[in-house]
Image (cartoon, rainbow, N blue to C red; front, side, top):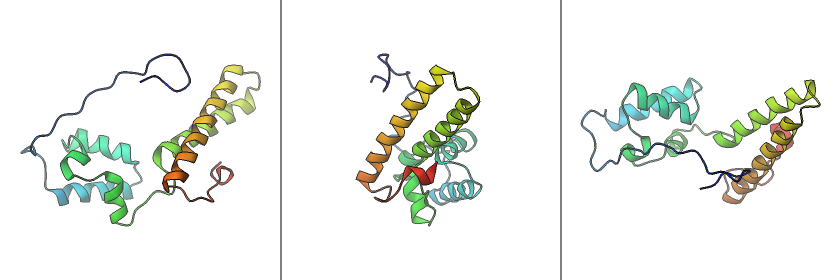
Length: 144
């Protein structure tokens, strides 16, 4: 698949382990769910929780093992993010670039980069409002 704002192809990625049956070394479902909740209460993002589970607890993936997405597990336990993770990271990136542009106003390439980041933010925002993950009255001004 091509990247969004260039004519080049995307980066290649690794393939996940195909799970036909549950590996013997994996802990019970309840222990994995407890670890997920513990990490989330420590303030880790969902992607960082997945990386920690993969590297320290040898869980190849939450969804293939528990047959549920991590966001659904967190939602069942009353922990839900206000803004989806990918949109939050794009907002953080836009803030950093705009802070850089205040100090370096002639940096044209970063000015273009901030425009591309904003277009991605607006596209994701429309998608999340349409699917119901963001409320219809959610505005970008509050987030920035």
